[in-house]
Each structure stands twice: as C-alpha cells, then as structure tokens.
Image 1 (cartoon, rainbow, N blue to C red):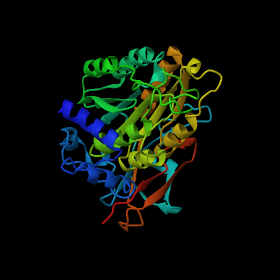
Image 2: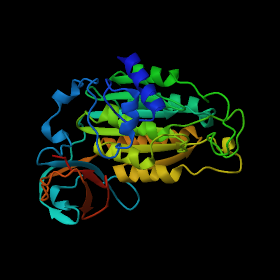
Image 3: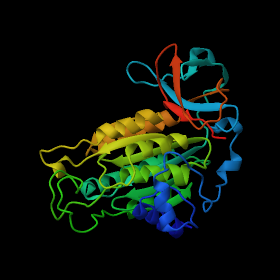
Length: 354
C-alpha cells in the first residue's frame, strides 16, 4: 500500500488536482481541480484504519450528526496553559448566536492522529539533518499506544514516505530517509527557485500548499478524534497548483489542527529575507494551531516540539447541538470565550451538505 500511496501522491501533485477517484482519467482529475473548494468526497482506495472503530463518539468531530465537538487550549496572558477549567467557564457562539453546551471534557489522554510534513526543497539543505534528529526524538516522546502518525515530504513532488503507524522507530526511519530534491536545473525566473535570486543550485519548486491539502484530504479526512499536522518548513511555497486558501479549507474540513515550525537557513536567502511566515500564520490561526519561528537553532526546535506536545496533551473538548440545523455545506464561524485566559481554537467549521 505504501508504494501505491506514494505513487498516487505524485500523480496528484503532477496533475495539479485535489482528491479524486483513482478510476478517473487524468482529464477528469484536471477538471475536478476547479471544484476543489466545492466538493470533497473521501477516496475509495484508502480503507478505514482500525482507529475509526475504536474511538468513543465524543472523540469525533462530527458535523453530519446533531453535535459539533471542538478541541481547544486556554492560555493565560503569559502563554502558559490553563488547566482545571470547567464547563461553566466557557460560552460558545456560532455565527454570533449563543449555543447551549451539551458536552465538556478536560480529558488529556484521548488518542491522537498526527501528520508530519517535512520540507525537502533546496532551501532546507543545511537544516534538514537537525529536523530529522529532533523530529525523531519528538515522535518517541509524544506517541502513545493508541496514537497513529504518518510522514510526508514535499519539494517538487509530494511523497508519502510512511503511512499510518504507531511505531516511532518506523516514523524516525522515514524521516531519516528523506533527501533534498531540487528537481534539477533552475527555471531561471526570479523567485521560482525557493529564494529571491535564481541560480543553478536553487530548487524548482516547493509544493507546500499541495502537501497540506493532500495530507488533510487524503490521510486525515477519514480519521476521527484529535488530529494535528506539524509542518517543518520555511513557509515559502513555490509552484503549488493549489492556493493557501485551498489548503486551509481542506484542513478545516478534516478537523485538523495545523502547527508550523518555521525553520529557515537564512544564509540561503542572503540579504533578501523570506516572507512565508505570513501565509503560515494564516493557516495555523484558522485551524487552531500556532506558527513558531525556530530559525536554524536545534534548541529552539526542541522547545517548539515540547510546546506542541504539551498543548496536544492538555486540550479541552466542548460539544453542542447547533441552533442552525440547515445542511447547506457553508462555513460556520465559531467563537469560544473563556471567563479567564485566551482560547486557542479553530475559527469555524463547514456544515454538512444534504
């Protein structure tokens, strides 16, 4: 299955399309690209993992039933997590209308489904070994018996290098197996090489947005419970066929929290700098995660992973039956307010479509 999925990721990347049935022709796939933000149906070729039947109903973000569940964190003014809050400490609004909370939990041991996305474009040449080492240590630390994770690398292509597994050893091996791929000669067009100055050593592309879309749409959309995506990149997208908004929408529809660790070899960009952080902050804020700038320092990367681990293990869950029961497929704005502290949560969800 691994070989098949890796091949399928490449086919989707090169054809510039979102998820589509594997029986369709490439022409049909290209046609579906225009409707990426309108229709998303789970691929028939990916069988449900055993996790789906093991979860409790409250663990699932379900909008095709009468209850919406949201995972979130609460922090004080210094950014420290606030534990011990109760149902009465919160109120939730959907499109401005106050909702009645039906379920609340401060459970910290719910199973976790995790996607690790690692940038292997030319701009990461000098920081990739650090990412591999610290990322492997993080996986050993965070994974528990019922957790599952997968690894994707992206450059000019998007590759699934390790499918769902609970083995931190297999996941670390997958991380260590990835290599920098510049895709050959530069296009010679300023800005098309992952940096501001074209040269023969610059990569031709960094399919960051495509990778986020595929990870959410192909791998996480059919999973249940707590889901998160950790993206190790400098945030610069070059050559994706999809937009940042497509990536955000896909993550929202799959109920995936996105974290971005901005890892940049600033020497690669010379004095020109880079601007990928703006779009990455948009992605993480909309999905309830965070963007953490670690530069090229191993200690800051380790601290960032520790922070993410703490946040994922100390989430609250709130559930309600929305007043608006119309199944129109539209985006619903969410606002969770705490009596004390600041809530870190997704900005909304997509209603089911009849």
